[in-house]
Image (cartoon, rainbow, N blue to C red):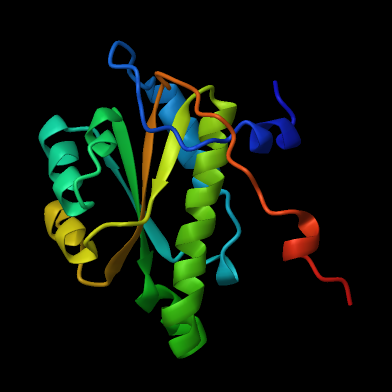
Length: 173
């Protein structure tokens, strides 16, 4: 089992998936459990996760995500949506506009790290038409799609991308 630091170091955006392997239900369940273990404002979990495995729906999500064809190649797509009204009930407008968004993105991040720990690959997709995604998934009116996370066994391991040096992104006070 990898430790946390190795898991983070081995996380890369995977855009080519093996078509001969499916994501085992127990791995998917473990990934979803880790997403739901993420911290959230007031422990409200102001988000919802849709699991998309149907080929036709995965293909429709390609169209909703500016033609990014790798989206349909992944056997699983996790769609993370914020639920602003849940957070607003406790925190008002800041809960609706910020905390629910943070809750959804933190849950998606935990899921992405769990994917790596499970021996799978993923890519975070942020470029999509949220209205089209909501319509395709028949989301309740209060849900706002925030991120698509493609999940599957990698067909290739991308080269690590360069990162800015700590001195460029960190300030000590």
